[in-house]
Amino acid sequence: MGKPITSQIQPELLARENTVYSVRVPLVQFKRLAELLNDTQGDFTAECRFAAWDAHTKVYGQLQAELGLLCQRCLQPMTLNVDKPFSLICVESEEKAEALSDELDPVLLDEDRKIQIVDLFEDEIILQLPDVARHEEGDERCQVGKMEFGKLPEGIKEEKRKPFEALEALKKDLKLK
Image 1 (cartoon, rainbow, N blue to C red):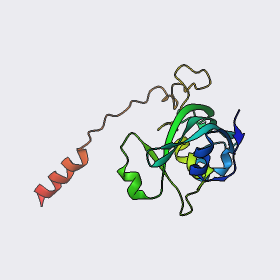
Image 2: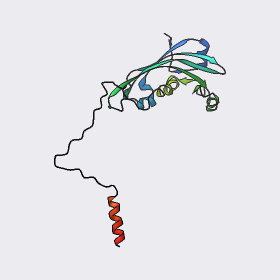
Image 3: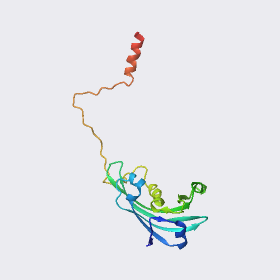
Image 4: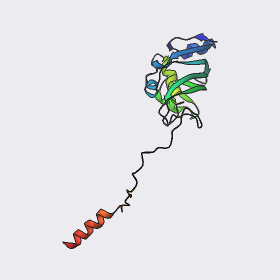
């Protein structure tokens, strides 16, 4: 288990100590993420290391969270377990972020070369969300049955309408004039 970490950090200083840090943040503190979740109960946790990398500071480790989503198939609550490695490169400006190769994920530091823990990890968690949240196939909690809207009484025949019937009548009316 690593040392606990404060809400605002200076990655360069942490990289000098070469220590493993533990991060625990309530999900409700991630404002943009909270808007995407059905339930903000629980915590985000991460074990992270800071290291000097090239002319930057690298933050890497493992992030974990249980995210409460709403299944878009059955509209019932579901939990998405996230347990994923991450690797971020701290940069001071957008220009430096764009100069990095596409394989590297940049994170912007403020003018004091510091960053809020929430800002450091929020995008990483959002990227773990599926495009469409739904239970796994075969999950008995997610049973959407066949939709039936009732039956017509016997003796009533369904009329098959021609889609251009009104245009045909209009055409005849125009020819008569």
